[in-house]
Image 1: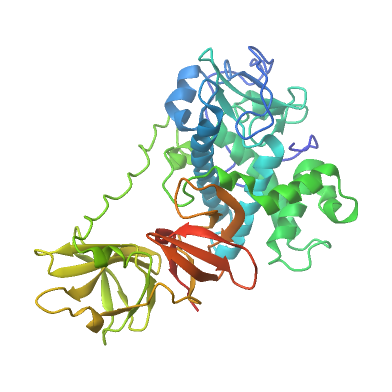
Image 2: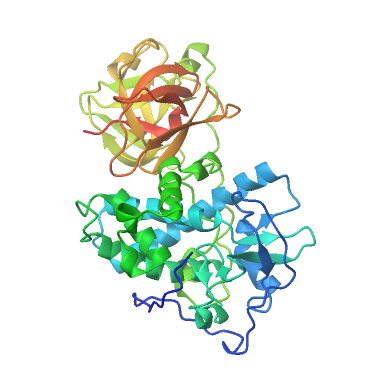
Length: 444
């Protein structure tokens, strides 16, 4: 819980908005209270959002992150966490970039890692719940003193809570980030953090201060509480990733409006639909190329194109290795194109004619399926990905988490099966299956 010690706003974009009610007049009394379970999206307990926010205001601005108590819990948890992850990702990213425009990608990733674990430790990522009675409530913990996702305590932050910064999801996150960011900055020079680039220990320090006050920033190192131990466990295990379907897609909320503009805000629209899959090649031998690794041998490299617009996305140099994600043909099956990802961009490369003679070897060399020991990594849009226990979406997610971002794990290719690749994190015994579209060649 956000410590009940007094804090002041530490950042110039701290939340300000015109409230429909006088702060002194709004009651924080919990009404229409319901219980819950200690799991993502349903942590007990929850109270009516009214009068702090109207039911319609929450529905119109936040419907994608309402946990529906009437739905089947496992499926609903996946829907909820898949969207809530994107909200935390984008709010945290925008906040940090405004606070420190020169921040490195590595520090941004470390900051977000800490934020995700904080949200888990405080509330199991729980905020809005749509009850079976169709009444919208928001999370209240610690004897109803803790408000919302990052648990703002009404024993010290009562005016802010009456002003709506507890019930409104994005304002709640930003209010908590004011405190967390101040501790994050201080952690870079704290005695219990060996170097400013040790982002894991900085996150632990920032949470200790968030929970216990600025003077407790090294509590995790000197006299850790059960909360410090729990936070570390959640940071290491990243349990939320078991439910998040895609860490790189667009958020459905209008985060920019919700953070900085005058309310009300509308939804930004449904998440972008998945791209239409390329037609299956008619030649069975071409279908067998999917999931294999191709080395570009054309002397001048090959342009990566968007086939729909014919726009050149990037030139892939000779000698580059890419994973073949799909294969398509054009012009009466004469020209072959391979869908690949390079430098964070996904498109298609020309892979030669099929008729009257096969010219593929002049453009790419496809490795045999038995060829292993190739190094790949997550695409730049994937900060993390959980591996699966077998090849396919029907397979369970394993406990193995692969890191992407600015310091990606090197992944050893072990096996290929259709559009799925079995990889092993280099220098470990951790392995599992991942879809080829999530991979790119390992950059040096």
